[in-house]
Length: 320
Image (tube, rainbow, N blue to C red; front, side, top):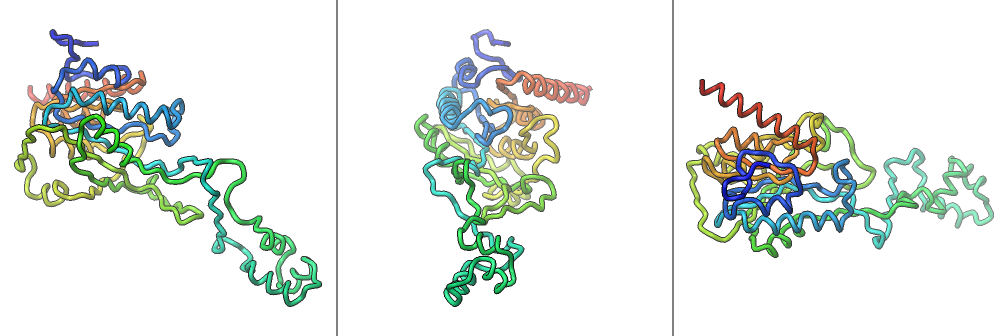
């Protein structure tokens, strides 16, 4: 671990460890922008050890630990999605009578009407009358073809932005802005649709929190076309990565690049405390900023360091 003479972590390095602990070793008020995407609590392999309470503690404590290291007037940016299948054992089961998916279009109302008109008929005779199987009669009468699950808790959508806002304000930050990152659906060229009215996963939140202080507003950071296309727009259309082969949860370089160009100046320090494959660090290097990255996973640290070293070496060669 590289420390500066004043015993603070040196910039332009990737460090292995828990962000909640490493943030204590970052120089106070030195970070212009901390931009990161935490675990989403959706069952990825690197977060299977986290239940909801542990996930909440991780994010709440990480946000709180940021307040001392963000410069006055600086920003904390969090990219996060909602939890689309949050288990809630107290929620009534959603019963979905998916009529459009039924091969036999006989309805329960039709079966009940036939029963009333012919009270002596059994299910086999009703089936013959309606031109369907006795199983269809049984399913319609007993609702046993209505989907809803039998053993797993019912799931609901859990919105994360309000939780992040609550934890950030408790730490002393204020919600300054929010953007919506519209990516492609959950996988490239997806043709998947659920058996309910729920939508596919194709957007995430970018929440921008401000630490009180003087904020430099410099529109010259972007050219007029960039300001018109995304600088002042709330919805960012950015394709997701084509493959997560290197890391399970990569975001496209354009996402941190926009945040860095919009909210920082050259040579400012950009921090990513869930650095993953190092995308934010690479964007910072590309935009002439200093970087610092944390990750608890040794493979992520190895990958991020390798990518950063390659980018720095390429930059040095370009100067020769």
